[in-house]
Length: 231
Figure 1 (cartoon, rainbow, N blue to C red):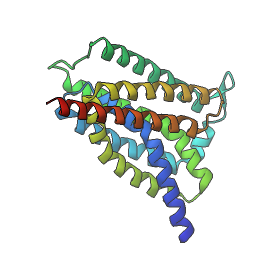
Figure 2: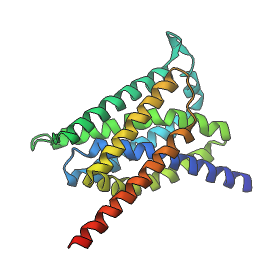
Figure 3: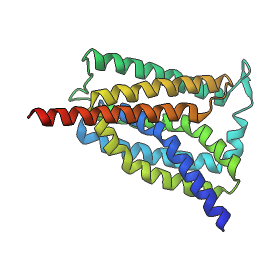
Figure 4: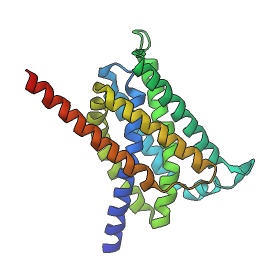
């Protein structure tokens, strides 16, 4: 019992760390929606993604079959990672350009429902791409399906509550938005490298991202204190 609890906590921590990718992606995807639709899009998208991820856990033997060569020595998993990485880089570079050039795209009054359905679809698709490595890593630690499922559910509860406040903060602060978009470029490159079987140790990605975020938070705090001192 103690081993199962320790494994559950380890898997939970792993899912939370990997959930950073999800929060960044979700923030950018819903940023174009009207404010009143963002939370709904997050909740619906994450709920569907949770069901999809649990189905992936239950069908792990099928997930393993996706690693067999399919075309040009690339498996279906590799192609999914490649497509996801290219999409993230394209999306991030486009958003950086629009943000820097003050060309923010807004959803027209007649399109909010269509835009929300599109955002939900993107959230689910990108979560499935991220879940591939997550599920494989989880089964490398334990073959206890219910433990993995419990870790996935617990991490999604945390993600559900964290995505909203973090996302709104990033949207309201352009410098943090550009930082988040830069993270997306990095994650996209990582996915492409993994698609071509170049393993990238996750600490090499997440530690610099965490350090950059800390520096940005300090600069943000300094700016706020300077503004208060000038009043």
